[in-house]
Image (cartoon, rainbow, N blue to C red; front, top):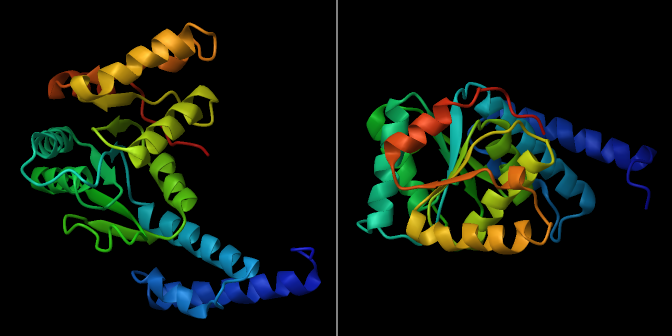
Amino acid sequence: MIFFGRLESKVLLTGSLIVMIMLVNNPHNPQLIPDLYRDPPSDEDRLIRMHSELSHGFKEMHPVQRALSFFGSAKTPVGHPEYQNSLDLAKYLGEEGWTIITGGGPGIMEAANKGAQESGALSVGLNIDLASEPDPNPYQDISLNFHYFFARKVMFVRYSSAFIAAPGGFGTMDEIFEALTLVQTKRVGKFPVVLFGTEFWGGLVEWMQEQMLASGKASASDLQIMVSDDYEEIARHLATHRLRPARI
């Protein structure tokens, strides 16, 4: 099938118009949109959903300024030192004027959103449709829902001028290496990347230096990564970089 032949274009255009009407009438409930789809969804259905997630995200994120993305594990329990440290760092950076963007889930994400709200800063959650994270954390001023990881990543990158990763697993690694790759390939500006937690992240950075850098698979400029536990040091580092809109 040729996707953008005459018939398929009409299907996509009609679906997109329906989506736009639904978003106007229900701007905070894009989860209504999957009711339009067949089971299993067609490729046209998927295109409509991708469009709806991106357009709704751009609309709701438009007011966001001077923001950073704060990544970390969903599995970190309340009361754990990493939870409290992330809350305190987000609160400190919020008091410095930063909007905090997280993945909207529990654990480190919840801690960062809570810290942002406690500081009076704007707190944003980009929630993903996962069985393991069924409910957004309650500390979000702007709360968006995504089915597609890539659409969610566009929002992280488009509206952030810095990236911070607290201890986390595969998802955190995916997010931080996405940021590093975009900086390396100049698809975004040379925004700061901070690994928060020297004990947790130190071994990874050593491995990158000893293996990737030493073997010529990365250059020294690719590894301009700060590893720190110090809130003031991190804030000073972020302040040395010029804020500018990310470009995809």
